[in-house]
Length: 216
Figure 1: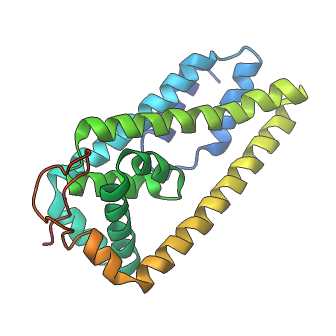
Figure 2: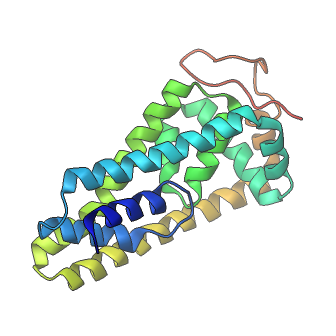
């Protein structure tokens, strides 16, 4: 495959959310270890395009907060997850913005919750940038280090893909537990998420925390 075409494919599979790309990222790492691709360029493209996608989701949710809330509240699981995420963003701020990226669907939920909350753009961009850089390094690094260690690209790709699936399974289990807890304890989500936590007003709280989600 042409190098420029492969770089373009990396952009197309990392900019939008929920596009399966683990195998492609591991393969890119393998090709970089063999000198066929330039590792820093791969990392820059993967992290940069993913961050751009995150910012688009954040800005859309910030601009169209009402329709986004309405869409997420139609489904009990989406509503519970939004309320739980909103409460944690207000409580923990930047560290949670970074951490939620690594849960299944966390990229979408985190961006939408931050946008609806009107979490400060600079803080969100910083958190998302750190998260995407870490994710890109981990995903591509699996293929790069695996190939460099085993000397066999196919083995490296299989190992990298297997590790990615294992990490995704752990993340899915965590998210499942979070959803169950949020559905069993709606009072916490109502108090910390949409219903307006202490202060209930607009603007940023002390310490860089965003204001409560405004109910519609």
